[in-house]
Image (cartoon, rainbow, N blue to C red; front, side, top):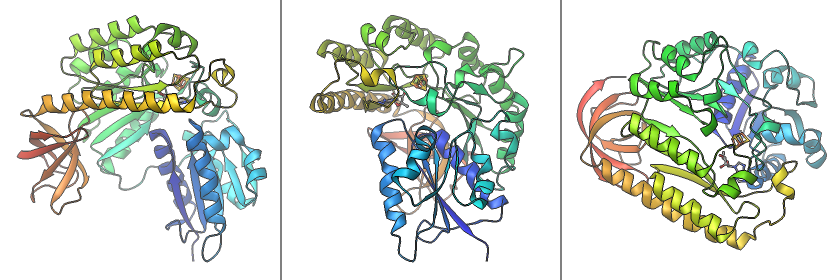
Length: 433
Ligand code: 5AD
Ligand code: SF4
């Protein structure tokens, strides 16, 4: 009988993409898929961005070690693997393999070695070594085009766990986009830690890449994330106005609203430059939805700094935003800065920020009611006959209609708004799956 594997992925979409590729790699090596309770090999694809995420892996290892019917072989992959390396095996001796995000193409070989640790950032990119994409994928698929970060925000582990900024060649991205389209994808989200810093050589930027991917037959929608304000180009904004497949949505994190804080975060932009950029984008791409990321309780954050974050959120009018309590990460400059903020203050500020973000999201959704737009249906809803899809502005839209199927793109009238979703009514089926 062939051996089996299961993967649990934590954290960002790039990790979700890596988990898919690890699955394909193991299947190409003869493994079959199983659930966590039965698999011979369990891969934990970990996240190191905040302490809470990083600690989750150890509770999972504990559970797997004492699993009914015997422990599986345990692989720790992802960013905790990169950051902690051999320390993981010292702390959790039941782990067999530790493999970093730039070395996982070697996982089948590492599994054959018994115990192994590989946190290299090899010269030959892993993408060249991975097997072809799966025969079937979902209606919306991720495609990593760029990895790593050279910006060194003082709170962030990414430059250490994922390495410096590296872009995949445009031809390789195009080939993978075609393979994903043939496997059933109708929407592609081009991923990168700094995706708008994409540099395919010979002056090929993200805007050029998007224009190329838009030519792939079957790809009706293109998205990209995450962008850095410093790398936002005119060409990319123009692409929003000119490429019909490029969805009107921009995730452009600012992190905070006060200049002294942004300086200590080493963000390389100011409140004013960010607001001016957003105003320019909104003028050139009317109706575009903006989203962002925020950190509260960064070292030295005063009440006034925090008020400035709230006022920036109100001024931008985010369609949605993600917010986090600052978590000191080993080896990053902010972890040893003076003025660490007490947990209770972080909690209160996070609650207040999330309230203001929620008000903005509800206002954005309410303003959509009465509109007609195309929705790509991605999964079943909880009620029988109900499907959940995404509007062009990345809102979740629920529609109950027996004629719809997953993978369909339909014209839908938005009839009711909640803070995190909208109710829609089918107008016509635009493109069947
Ligand atoms: N603490 C809290 N949030 C963080 N992020 C990155 N590093 C930290 C940290 N140390 C947030 C940022 C980033 C998002 C992916 O995670 O907002 O944009
Ligand atoms: Fe981290 Fe800043 Fe790089 Fe984003 S831009 S990955 S927050 S260092």
